[in-house]
Structures are given as C-alpha cells and as structure tokens.
Length: 294
Image 1 (cartoon, helix red, strand yellow):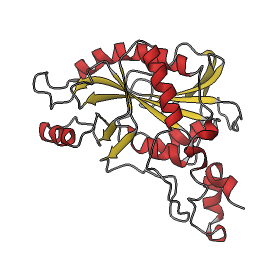
Image 2 (cartoon, one colour; image 1 turned 180 degrees about the vertical axis):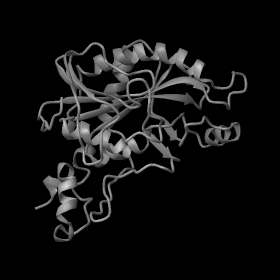
Image 3 (tube, helix red, strand yellow; image 1 turned 90 degrees about the vertical axis):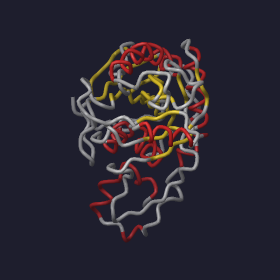
C-alpha cells in the first residue's frame, strides 16, 4: 500500500539488508509499504512489523531477487523513505571481503571508518540551490555501533570492533594489484555499498552503524582460492542466520538516539540564506531541512 506516514517519537529500527539478507522472517504484524520520495522509489517495498516490542523497518538494498547492482541502487530514495517512515536508528548489513588475516570468512566486523572510492554515485541530498556541509569525521554512531557489536557477539559469531571499510565501485571484484594496495592502507574489509549510504544517513540525521559480514578473503590472500560468487554465497548463507539473530538482540537494546551527534548533523551545516532557497527546493527537502528553515 502507498503511505505518507510521519515520524514517530518512539524508537524505530531501520535495517538495510545486503546480499543474502532479503527479509527478516521474525517480524510480527508485518505490512508492506510502497513509498514515494522526491528521489524516486527505493530499492523495493519496505516491510514494517514488530520485533522484540520494537518497530522495525526492513529494506533489501538490492531488491528482492537481487535485481539491482551496487552502482544502480537508489541510495537517496532508500534513506529518504526510511526517514519518512519514522526511522530513529539505521543499521546496515553488508557482505564484504576481508583484508586482514585475523578477520576470517564467517567473522563479523562493526566498522567505524570508511574510504570512498566510488565514482558514479550521487552522495548528497543537497542539489544546487541549497548548500550544506555536514561533519563526517566519525561516520558511525558510537553508541549504536557498540550495541550492535554486543548483539552480534550474542548471536554466537566472532565480532571485530572497529575497522575501516573501503568501498569500491564494482560490480567487478578487485584486481590482485588493487587488493594489495588497499591492504597496504590498513583497511579491514572491502565492499561495494557502504557509500554513499553512510553519508546520506548522516545528512538525514540518522544514527548509523554497519555490520560487515566477511564472506571471503579478497584476492590478496594467495593461500586461498580467488574470490568467486559461489564461495561468497556459501559463507553468506551461514552469516545471514547470525545476522538475523543479531538484529533481534539489538531490537531489545537500542541506545538513546539523542546522544548521537547524527541527530543534530544539520544544525550548523546549512549555509544558504533562507530567502535564497527556491520554493521548489524547499518543497523537495522539507522532510529533511524543514525544522531548520523559518
């Protein structure tokens, strides 16, 4: 059904599922929401339901059936739709390659930094006509990330707290030379979807955390076979079971969002004089900047 639901002051956990995670089967009272945004439609319909007495919104990043590649995802519509539906916390689940020996396939990483090597993607909600410079030095919410790490550990997997996610354009995997270069930078994992998702979450003032599910060693690891889709999917099937359990545990212990710097990210970020903002731009971004404009 189509909806224009407004934000709810109660906690609403939004989860964006990556490769292999296309539904949260444990949701009760689920309903399917088709959401329109000023940026078009999100990747798929959003499922809303209750999990552990918490409202949860679930969106499969690549769409059900995995029909959308990493460069073609409508990241802006995804974040906008979740925000408009009342999300107060956002957790991203992402399949990644490991860039460190100690992060074995099947381990989880709750990352805290990103390197953005993407080239084709729109990474801001702010089009010409309204300029905003949002702080992004610490791109994840520390409280939400800590709660997510504890929940992941409680699901029975090895969890690494902290680490850098290098985001490449894809859809191809890295060359061996690229993989060795990224590894020399000290990154922890490599993937194709964290950017611009994390940037847009910060602009949308959503506390954000990312659970990276290691499916393979990237091709730098010469003692292992080169990464293949078959190997990734085999490990992912096991990872997804633990990721679902982690989401269930997190739903019981969401931190106070008011403590997150994300919740006031736009307070001092808007530079354009209000009288210089066109009515069309105001209308397009009212869901985002309305509280800050007279």
